[in-house]
Amino acid sequence: MSPINRRLSSFRRKTTGYARSIESIFIRLERTLRLKSPLKFTTKRSIEAIIFLLLFIGFFWMLAYRMTLPHMLNTFMQTAYQLLMETVFYLMAVCVLMGAIGKLLVEFGVVRLLENILRPLMKPLYNLPGVAALGAVMTFLSDNPAIISLAHDKNFARYFKKYQLVSLTNFGTSFGMGLVVLAFMTGKGYGQGALVGLVGAFIGSIITTRLMQRFTLKAYPEMDAPVYDDNTSGDEQAISYKSEGSVFQRFLNSLLDGGKDGVGIGLAIIPGVLCISTIVMMLTFGPDTTTGVYTGAAYEGVPIITWLADKVNFVFHWLFGFESGALVSFPITALGAVGAALGLVPRFITEGIINSNAIAVFTAMGMCWSGYLSTHTAMLDSLGQRKLIGKAITAHTIGGLCAGIAAHWIYVLISLI
Image 1 (cartoon, rainbow, N blue to C red):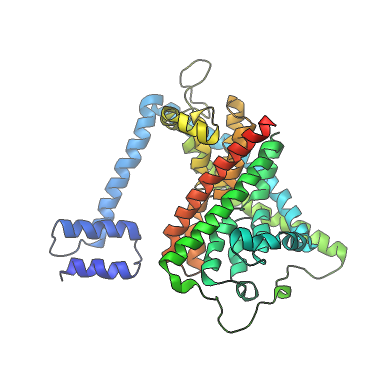
Image 2 (image 1 turned 120 degrees about the vertical axis):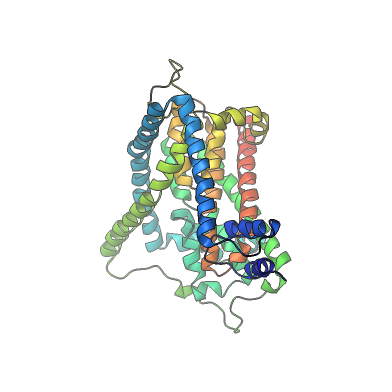
């Protein structure tokens, strides 16, 4: 076996420190070119840098060619600034308030009450033990990683089989930042659409969790075994979030600690909103609507996404009820960060291209996907199951699409009543 083939075989068995997908490409290139020795690391990095620069410069040259360089740069910075001032701080305020409310619900037992109410639904709908309901409520009140902190709790994990425990990644993500999304949409005056979207997200969560379990068992039948095979059962009473002190002290601490957690979430969404939403907006909206020319103002751009989506908008209209191809930008952005996707909503409202049906679809897909492309890898890695990342992403992609479709058609049925 040649040195390159031996390296490819070894690479398949374990992940190196270098990015796996890029390294795999170079290994195949070396084998195709029949090189006698592998490329040096610095050579590969130089090739990667050249390709990146070509794509980077090409992307911004395309924008500058249509907008002119001064207008493009000004729009780029003005859009980020307007998003920060008009959307991010509003979202941060929502996160702080919802974080405080969520902490109060945890502290005074409301979360455990909801868990007991939802417990009977877990086995028939999700094929999960009843205690999993606690994870759904916790992620709904906070964010995706909350489910992983529970999964690492031995008293919690003892209720699960291995394939069920890894499916918590999909299950918990389906409800991530749910309270913030609902509050944001309701605050914009679309409460009915947001509630329909919640139902859609619920349907999507069932699909993605069941698919993940099916994919896992099909590939790894040995995971149909308890997480802790020591003949001991979990102690649900040991899973506690109650703090010490008087009722007033517990109330005050929960309020402040929850608000502080909300600040953390608010800060975490800033890069996504400013970087992702800015780029997406510049690829969604065109020049000034009144003059038809570029002025360098915020929210201008080259509407490539809109142009492409309009070509097949009959598909999106039938599946999601979208009246404009520009609305496709929301689910695309929600793949990476739901906070960034929420940053698009105010502009859609200003443009007059949004309605309650679109809000229902946005809520369902935003809540169900919750930026899973940026969290699934870390979540499964923390569970020691990196081999299941591809299956988790595939299952969640299908689940999110089903959530949006379900929200649209539920809204249509309600509108007919």
